[in-house]
Length: 342
Length: 284
Image (cartoon, rainbow over all chains, first blue to last red):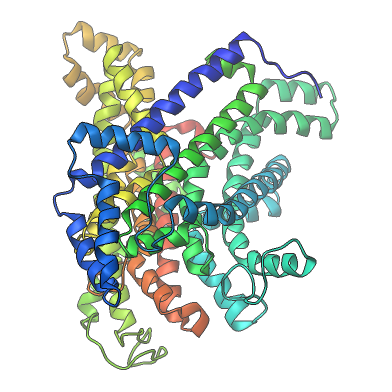
């Protein structure tokens, strides 16, 4: 491993990115703040009705829950006070108390569900990125074979399948018809999360179908774009020259592969936000208790504190992931740091 | 009669023609289908009937005719795609064109706004906005509107980049000498040169709208939204009735296949138009 190229340009680049990150997060917070105050149909009125019917057998809880809700939105205070309070709480990570899961704190619900979502989305995104790139590069390098046309067709169609529909197909095939995988959840009832072999095997058994429904779609996308990049790269002068002086095939492949990988890194950053939202819907299909599952529940129950909390957490996570990818990109490609365009 | 070059290029493009045929077939099903099969998609009867001659795609958990739902849903989903595409294309064109023709401060401001919209996952914002709407306003058309409102940024950037490179062309310089205003320049010189690209992006936005509505319907719908029909709502109900664990394949297979067929055919159309716009991409 060579020394990391951290110099002045790199520091400047990171500083710029951090400032942009904070500004964008600030704007996201503003959106979250303005929205409920902008929509004319008073969402809290519907919510009050719902709370009353929901706690019909525990009427003493109604005013308490209602006060909690008002406390979060603070509609009774002047607008600038509301905004400053909201801002302070959003940066500390205090989003109040969930209405649907009362009396759990929004932060606790998120802390409970975020790990499950991350264990699903991060491996699926990374594994599909790596394998997709390798398969796509190989297909692009071995031009015009049966393999290439199969891969072109597969990547073009499969990359357009919605994850959640593929999830339904997989459930129908493997859980209903063949009965070899469970229909949902993350582990069998009776087991407790622990690092025993029994639990891990059981978890992976439940994990396979949700993972596949994301992986199969994502890998198709990466295969397609990598194949195109590699075929573009193979027509460049430096490859043609190297080929003419008799550079080995495997070396040529390595050159082309490395250079084509760069745009794919940016692609990964752009794709993460999209993939996360897709994973949310997959979670509702599998009853996989991640963020998406609780988001869908919160939307159904009009649990605004939880919706806001999940929204801001996801935005923050996606921004951080983007930042990380940008950082890696700048490490790999010096041109990025000085802002040159190729 | 001479066939114009662009039509010749498109007809010769096998992938474009394949996309066009699939698209026309689905549009035909959506437009003519409900007339040929005039059964009310919301009337309730016997529940969970498998496909038969009487009910070509069976019935759902409310006993509603799935085939009738399916035909109406295609119509709605096409409208959803159109709404999204019109809004996103219009916003992207206006913002990209202004940023591309005016340089300096205007460009900087517009591009910062675009970059912020690009960084925030657009589906998520649509989910947030829609979750504040009362349930009766979460129908497919409003969702389509929201998706359109948040999916224009990449297009605005592309238009700006195209304009900035076209701006340096000799034909633009000549028009400027002839005293063209910026607006006339945009409409007479710049827009016509990227016409196919805009149409292609319109198709891409349609696909975004159709697939996006399906995803958002899954997250946002509640069991009270019985009167809404769209391909996404059909999948929501399939999920609601757990069709994939009870074996009722007729509830989720047709709408899903149609969504994939629609988005794939629109992508083929966009690809064909891009090849027309950029001859270097054409197959020799």
